[in-house]
Image (cartoon, rainbow, N blue to C red; front, side, top):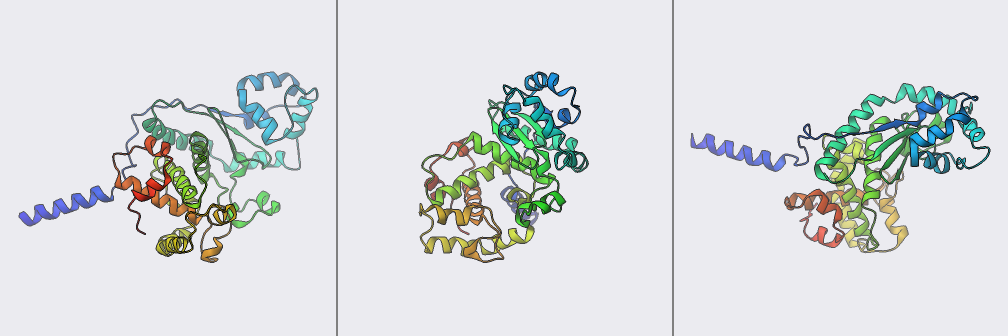
Length: 333
């Protein structure tokens, strides 16, 4: 009996240590998520309606309408005399936009998108009960920006998530490493990551390699908290093989950066080698993924939060002492 109790105690200890503390029950958290589909409204317009519809569109879509017309499709604003003609010219473009519309309708499951966003923002409301839930806007931008952020606004261009093999992306000559993450499974993660960047922007003291790595690690930990059930491959935008590479070579990558005195370098080109997107990290060979510095920063932050269960997500995101996070992380790859 004593042996049985001992084994059960060990099992409970193991379970409590291995359980992901971010996997919480948020079913009781209510969110009033608003999603507005500019792409659907624009598709329904004909040439005779467009001029009369512009004021209603601007009223319905508010700030995002200007973001869309100025930034995403670059036709300017409604104060221009020929604005309705320019907008209709974009909507009726048979070379690209008209071809994109039916493919977006076929490839993007908007019901799935809503469910994933609602679940993510339940977690957001759980950790940040005082913060407002942003309004979500979808659009077709003609393969321009993927995600745009403004005050209480997240806009997403659905035509940037049609799948790695989409002929639109192949014809554009986009490299495989970029196309791999242009699918529906990445939409919510991209939106959450971009939202975190706007809510907790990079501070002025994030000027060396280590601070950049930990800052990225914080953003990724935010994604962890919003999508705790999601596989790390989707969160990071890596293949399984690339995740396995990072796990297998984590210690040697960390040692390389330390021995080459890279952790405290402020040289922008050196930092970009380990934090920017690309086919691979040149220092670690063609089998490595890019952004390995970001991946290590993520593991540092995970280790820090594991060591300090008393620190909540809001405290972490507000913490700009990157060296302290490393020092107190007990990070030992």
